[in-house]
Picture 1 (tube, rainbow, N blue to C red):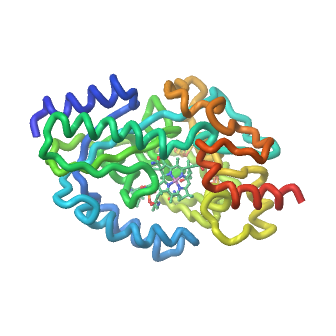
Picture 2: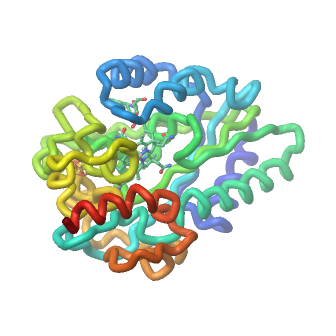
Length: 296
Ligand code: B12
Ligand code: SF4
Ligand code: SF4
């Protein structure tokens, strides 16, 4: 599809909707499927069995959208405070301190989809943020949004890694943007900082050891040892991002007020009344059980 079409989408996404980047790639990520299969086979996903069901969709995006050809990748910075104290009693990760990003991002993706369909009514779209079986990091990497950090995050030089990824699959072929050729170099700060050794050499990542998994995803109750390891984190974990030099103090804060701590639970968990518009609200049963166990 002609460049003018891409430019219109990009301009609308960045200038009107205030996404921090918008790039284009093909809908397939064939080259990363063996990595994903190996990761599952090794049991790195623990109790997140839904990730096994995601495999067939990641292998074949046409199961999500018939004749899917391209992916539009948008990102939004959620950095919501200049610095963060990683110590403390009960800690909530930056991404969950504001309003629920699923809801906020989905609304913006709807607006972008409406804009695209207005440009060309014959185009079909399928969008998702986090909860749909889309290979979001693989698409973001292929589109050149950023590079893969040793902490397994997509990192965009100049913005860091505190951003959400949103995807729109479309039925039209768009010229693909190029991936970034960048990497962490000799740095290994995140590997050394992860308190549970969830990160390993060669981009290894064992979710079952990750505090984020323990506090958000694990369905069975945390063991005493796991509770000890969470060390006050009650929803997510920011350590491997906070130590990353790409997330230095001068990175600008988000310009979407929804993601500011004042519009959600904030960083300090002090009350049992969790605002309904936060991601924590949906997980509150597990969250409160963990908090009560921690207090014991
Ligand atoms: C399951 C999941 C988790 C799990 C597992 C995390 C993980 N590292 O895999 C848990 C619960 C632990 C988790 C935690 C977090 N998550 Co999460 N999570 C997901 C989810 C739903 C699926 C990820 C997945 O499939 N993982 C399996 C691995 C194997 O796949 P992958 O990470 O996609 O990696 C692929 C690419 O890296 C690709 N690849 C491409 N090129 C290359 C090159 C090389 C050399 C290699 C090795 C691989 C590679 O291969 C991999 C396999 O396909 C995605 C949303 C989505 N639908 O994709 C969000 C997502 C990855 N999470 C996100 C976030 C924000 C977080 C947290 C920061 C939240 C928090 N503060 O606690 C932490 C970060 C922990 C960490 N260091 O990764 C963001 C990441 C944004 C970003 N900048 O990268 C996503 C994209 C959600 C979103 N829409 O914004 N998450
Ligand atoms: S989120 Fe925390 S526990 Fe998980 S890999 Fe990063 S530092 Fe380790
Ligand atoms: S802390 Fe260092 S090794 Fe880890 S992701 Fe950042 S730059 Fe890469």
